[in-house]
Image (tube, rainbow, N blue to C red):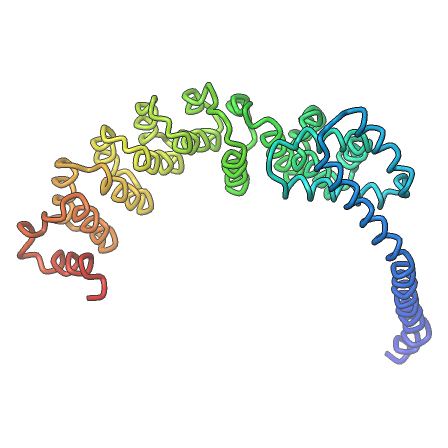
Length: 353
């Protein structure tokens, strides 16, 4: 034990002390160089901001812009990576904050500064975050020339890179969603949300083959197809959604139930009633939610039968809520002697009781 302590004091402690001093020295030196370069960075950023702002608000004329950009490159240390990064960040910032048809102007400036080559180097990098940064730049600028350089990343072994590439491609060509029908990658919930966000922003056209998406072997594509039908208020193929209510996959049935609700597919009432017993609690509750919007006489009879039989309390409460929404006067004449049902009716009509 004494020998161990001796070696600890003699060897390890000096190494740790030396490492600590080295770390402190590195931090001090980095801070020194940062403070030394800060005025240069701020001056360059100010010049870049002023130049790009003036160019954006100047009527576009190709030869004039080209001459001005070439002249401006000579006034800043443009060959330095940090300077290129400043220029690119400012272009993206202005593009994201200005409205109107200025995309072509930004893309021309981006090209004239040779920043596409800089972005490609990032995309070809072996580092995960640099690849993602490069894709973000293309997506932010809507630079469609970069599309072909992103396609190979769909087969990347890193799932995060594959996901980012997938979203970037959709963003660059939002009106080419037809190709998704052959996509084998399972779309995550996060990707799904991002896709819908892109569609909201870009105001894209409905995919011409949307009615065929339900035939995909990829469950996530079928689910996305149902969401797109709702998004585009696509009511030309209600039969497809009704058929999906009996799909083998529970999550697809869940999306189909929601779609019936949002698209007001009244002819799905019978299918929902027939499917009810086959579903788990989540889907059963969603069926009640949908029937409360589209249900009619058949739904009244179906729910009344449920209330007469032994049914779980949470299911029964939703059933009462659904039936009351279909026919607000139903419980004025029915189940008057059923104490449990009457309590639920009072709770629904007066929630604070």
